Structures are given as C-alpha cells and as structure tokens.
Length: 265
Image 1 (cartoon, rainbow, N blue to C red):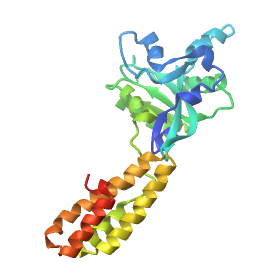
Image 2 (cartoon, rainbow, N blue to C red):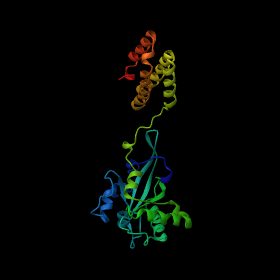
Image 3 (spheres, one colour):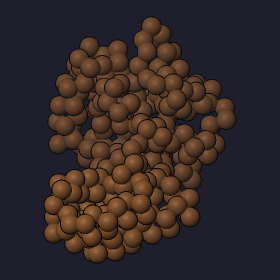
C-alpha cells in the first residue's frame, strides 16, 4: 500500500508496460490542464495514462465515471526501484469543500476504473484523491469517517498536489542509501585513537579500506566513497591526541596517513 511504504518513487518505466500507454499516455501535468488550465500543479516528469480519455473513446453509448489518471510507482530500497506497480489518481482541485463528496460516486469511479485498466500489471490497493491545500484536511477527515463505515474506503487517500509530488519523487533525487553500517566501526576507531592504539588502528583502517576497494572493483563507487568518508570523518579525532604522541607514535601516524592519503585529504 502507498501509505505504508518507507520510500516511494515515481516509476514511469512500469507505466510504459501497460497496454493503454501507447495511445493514452500524457504527463500528469498535461492531464490536469484539461480541467485546470491556468494552474501548474504537478511536475512535468510524472508520466500518466489518461483514463478519462480512454473511457471517452471506448464507451459504448453511455460513458461511466472514471478516475482521471494512472501513474507508475515503486518502493525504493537498496538504491533501486522494487515492487513496481500502478496507482490510480483522481483530481479534485475544483472542490471548495467536502459537501459534494459521495461515497457511492467515489466507489463507482474506483470500481469502473479498475475494470478498464485491468492487465497483468499490479495496481496498488490504495486510490489517491487530490484536493487543494485549503480543502485537503477536510477531505482527509471525510475519508477517515468513510473508512469507519465502508471497508473499501480504507483504501482512499486524500492528498494535496504538493503532497502527491512529495509522495512520488524521481528515483534520481533519493539520497544514496549505504549498504555498510559504519557507525560501530567509527566508534571503535575513535576509541583506539583515544587509547593511542595505533597498531589496532592500522589494522582496522586496512581492513575497511580493502572492503571499500572491493566495492570499487564492482563499480559500486558510492559505497566505496561512503566507507572511505566514514574512515576520514573518524580519523579527524587524531588531532586531539597529536601533541601527546611520542616520536615512534608520530611516525606511525604519519605512515598511516601516507598509506591512506584520503584520511587527511
């Protein structure tokens, strides 16, 4: 579900796999311009399928109500997109309050839309309804009340345009998620520095330097830099003991810094 994901991202690639994509794809921004031509609600990089247009073209006689759009989403874990799927989106930025909202109408939109977009691709259980900033809190309370009365309403989410954008950032904007937890290593290095145990320091830094180099050989350069940055950040604490080192310890310190120059770069 959308609301339970630790980190969601926009995934245009999975949307392109849907059979309706070739004919009905537009940016979510362009779809919003049909009803809100003077507003700029969404980033132009969020691709979508125009469900309303699909229904308009294919309805035999009477046109049923549908959600406005379908976008691609994915969870982001381990520095990559996983669990890619689709998400239904309804734009309600013209609502000034929740007085016109009806459970039966929203339910009908969701049910009919899911019948239209049915394919082998998974559609997320949640359905997103977008309201203006000044109305969205009312809408959240209304949907909370509906969820207490109707089970299907527990899968309805009210968001503002900005909240939807925040919910679906591009994967390229997500900060690198390190594979290696260096917190304990940094603590141990700081302790060895405090104890002036330069032999153990040399061994620890050599070990983790080799781990970083292994990632480098696998072209996982961000992980290599993560490990080396953490070693450098911990090594800064050497300045606190530098003036108390005897000549042999000072020479050992300089040897470490010569061997691993990035510690002081």
